[in-house]
Every structure is written in C-alpha cells, then in structure tokens.
Amino acid sequence: MQTITSISQLRKLLDNHRMAEQSIGVIPTMGNLHAGHMMLVKAAIQSCSFVISTIFVNPLQFGPNEDITAYPRTLNEDKKKLDIAGCNCLFAPSVEEIYGFDPSKSTVIQVPGISELHCGKSRPGHFEGVATVVSKLFNIIRPDRAFFGLKDYQQYLLIKQLVKDLVFEIEIIGIEIERESDGLAVSSRNAYLTAEEREIAPFLYACLNDVATAILNNDRDYRRLEKEGLQKLQEAGFHPDYFSICHAETLQSANAKDDSIVLLAAVTLGSCRLIDNLRIKIA
Image (cartoon, rainbow, N blue to C red; front, side, top):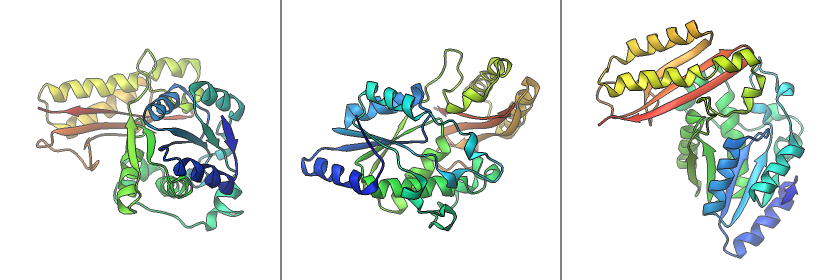
C-alpha cells in the first residue's frame, strides 16, 4: 500500500488509474481505525478497482469546546490495518496541505437545513467543517464511489445532499453499523469510556430497540415515545442530547403517516459523546 501526503502526487497517481479505466473508491476517515472502517474498505474493494483511504483530523469540524489535540492519532497502526485489508493507497495530508496555514480563513461549505438539526444544534459549525473537507477531498480525488458508515446517519444524508447540490459525479454508499457483541456501535470514541461506562453504553442501542418495537407494534405517539426514551437514558446514567423519531430522509420530526422512520440518539457518558440510530420501515 502506498502512503501519499501531497495533493499533486496523489492526483498524478490517480490520473494514471483513470487512464487505465479503473474505478476509484474512497473512504474518508479521521484515523484511529476500527472494525467499522474495515467494513468500508471491504465494501470498496468489492466494487472498485482502486481503493484509497484518507486519514485527516479535520480542525474545522471541532467546536470551541472540543479538544482536537485529544483526538487519538494512531497512524502506524492504521497503516497496518489498511494494508492487511487490501487498501491500495492511503492519503494522509497535513493541515497545511489541505487548508494552508490558517484553516479559519478557508472557504466553508454549508448544507442548509439538514446541518441545523440534531447534532447540528449542539455542535455548531461541525457539519460545515465536514462538508468543507469532504468537498475538498472529492475535488482532489474525484472518486467514482465514496463509502460512509451509517452510524453517522445525519452526516451520510448531509453528504448525499452535498453531492446532489454541487453536482459531483460520485455515488455515495452507506455501510451498515458494525456493532460489538453487546450491541454497542463500534466507534473510535469508545476508547474514552471507563470500564464502568463501557458496561452502561450498550443500553443506548437497547433503548432504541425498545422504542422501535413499540412503533412496530402500532404505537404512533412519537412525541411521548421520545420523552420516554430520554427518561430511560437519563435513568441509565447517560446525559442525553436528543432522542428523536424522524422521517428517514428529511430528519424532520416523524408523523403517523410516515412509513420510513429513523430513531436518532446522542448522549454523553462520562467524557464520551456517543451517537446511534435505528432505521425501520412501517408496513
């Protein structure tokens, strides 16, 4: 596996693959790779001729109360995992390579509407940072397909909207959530959990399942179910940010006529922010 740090070198490499009519797949990440990321790599290898993963800790998506220096950086371990998985290339640029010497003066991309909901409310500027770096990576790499985990479901929908609005010729592919044996969604942030908190964490997914079961059993009082979900999470030891029952495409509050639903939840447990979701179809 090649590791490249410069935009010019990467573009030259990818131009050669395009001339050979090879399809290009990309997996954008911030590193500290886990089993969920490896599922993205596996899916990309199955559908693309040349697979590139990116590792870039993006300063624009960290808020003023979020410590970017605390984000785990495990580049050597990540390289080994990608190589074993069969990834063809790693793009690991510096902040200066992507933004110049002052990221705060970079042009910013905003996706209206969806970026203002849920995580967008509690993490102002986060999704602008995501949209900006993803747009840059798409312009640099010009992939045929891009692969994203559905744990970050709001991010997935935002990127789909971004691609549509900016007319990128890129297929966005969402890969199902990889979970631990007890149901906890695999995440780089799980490393922040203490042993005691790790015992509590799976209840987030269990709570989502309980509410989904109630809905599938014809309980359509969504606002009551949201309140009950929040209460259960609080009683379990979480500090909930939101527990929302939404239309699966717009992320607006669901109503009784909607047949495609997503349950979204974000909580803090100790120093760790956890998010999860569960999508259901109503017959």
